[in-house]
Length: 108
Image 1 (cartoon, helix red, strand yellow):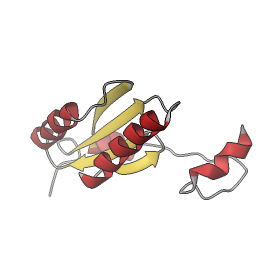
Image 2: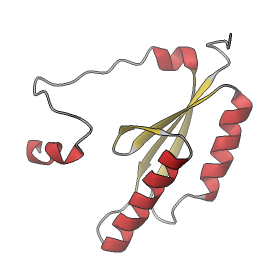
Image 3: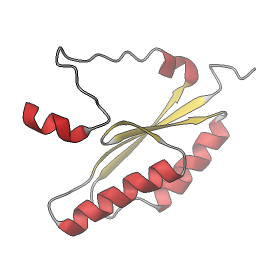
């Protein structure tokens, strides 16, 4: 069994410009790249990846580093499985399907 203290989660949080069509295409391409290598979307700009070992998480981070868009801000966070399992998710009173981000446009 893999230890909860040795298995890792890699979280990617990013803020990419989306003012122009080209910027939106680059941001979309980066999101697709993350999904293609096994990341799961937690929020529109926060993705996570389960890595069995610290070495695997380091390897994933090195690969991501090669694909970072020229503009924007990318943060890579590393959490043990134990730390990640303590995550709490809260949702407001308005129940919406979070897989459809366009539903949130009217809430602002």
